[in-house]
Amino acid sequence: MKSIKYNAIVNGILSVANIIFPLIAFPYISRVLGVETNGKLNFASASLTYFSLFATLGLSTYGIKACARVREDRTKLSKTVHELLLINAVTTTIACIALVISIFVVPRYHQEWKLLFIYSWNMILNVVGMNWLYSAIERYDYITKRSIAFKFIGVVLMFLFVHSPADSYKYAVITVFANVGGNILNIIYSRNFITYKWYGDYDCKQHIKPTLAMFATYLAVNVYSSLDSVMLGFMCGDFQVGIYSAAVKIRTVLTTLITSVGTVLLPRLSFYIAGENWKEFKRLLKKSYCTIIMIAVPMMVYFILAAKPSVVFLSGAEYADAAKPMRILMPIMLISSLSNITGMQILIPTGGEWKFAISVSCGAVVDIILNVILIPQMGANGAAIGTLFAELTQFCVQVFFTRNYIRGAISTKGTVQVVIATILGTVGYYLISSILHVGTFATLFITALVFFGVYAVVLLAFRYEMLIELLNMVWSPILKKLKKSNQ
Image 1 (cartoon, rainbow, N blue to C red):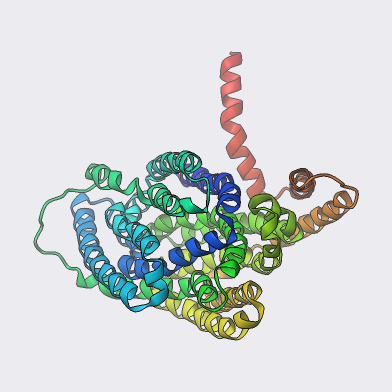
Image 2: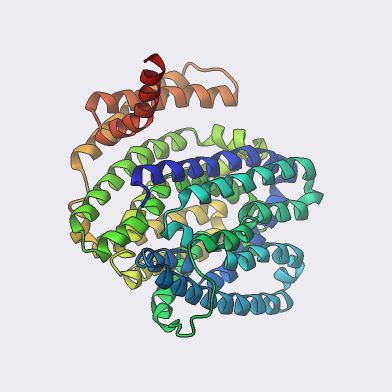
């Protein structure tokens, strides 16, 4: 097995890439396509999410757990992958049929049938993608290289072919290519780890119950991650969807970096539980908590403070109204990162899929109720409020279910240190921003430098364990190379 540090570094690189590429593409696309066209694209993409959910049926998470438990045995691993692929093929076929029917029955979907058809290839190519397999066997290096390569090609194609709102279909095709184009390579590369032959004694039934639990979970999650855009599209039009999507995009990009910790740890945690190694399980949970709050708390606070310049810089002045929903959404960065521990790192590895589903379903119910009440009156701001309380509800329910595990994972000392460092960083932000009279980019650069600089110095003064460990992980190889070159 690769070391957790290696996996964390490689997955961290992928997470950074998942931030950098959108940061390169989003400012350009926002300005070139405009609010209305971006709203239309997000409406179609969000609508297609529900068909994709049924197609994957929770395999993106359950597949990691199922394969991680048998990864030392090629035959068992091969049979498990075959069983999951058979289930995935059936559910994807049903989802495609449902999509075609919906296009003919729902007028708004019929109006956007071309975009829905294009985005449906995300769903179809996910069958052969098997990203859950590569996560289970901890081949994050392969996932990272492939993903970065296709994202880079996608960005180049975007600049070459997307120049006006009329190019929205081209942009949709390029997006699908960047997201799942590499999945075709996955089926070929998988031959290094599994055998493709007909075993004949498949037991697909054993996977149905846990995958249904994960499906219910992801369905509930996407109620308040995608339904907001769908409801805004139906109730308020494309402009409000465009404004809301700008706010969500920034929050999603930042959250991706933080929750990558959970993605790295899930297969290893499942492996430890299978071997009943509870000491290592609890040790990893504590490290995960300390790492997440170290990153999530200051990022949340900074982007609440700098919401307007961030939106204007990334999306353009016409998206300035997205600053308010962005501020409302920012606490979700911390809440969802912590629920990544209670859900993905505790409930899923310990067999609590249905508890996970219950927690997320509670959040979905809250989101639907608040959306119905608030969206007609408040538009994007109402959708943001609904999402915030939905995430908070989900997290509170998960805390109840995992209370016996998280007692040993929470570091009170580390939490206090992070809070103090963030407060001092905020003081630095206000002091420097009060005397700045420069452009948007310069404002963001200088205030971020001061805020995170003060934050890091204070944590170093406290000797914050995870920051010290991270710095040692980065500098140790460099120092070793310097010593060798001087010898």
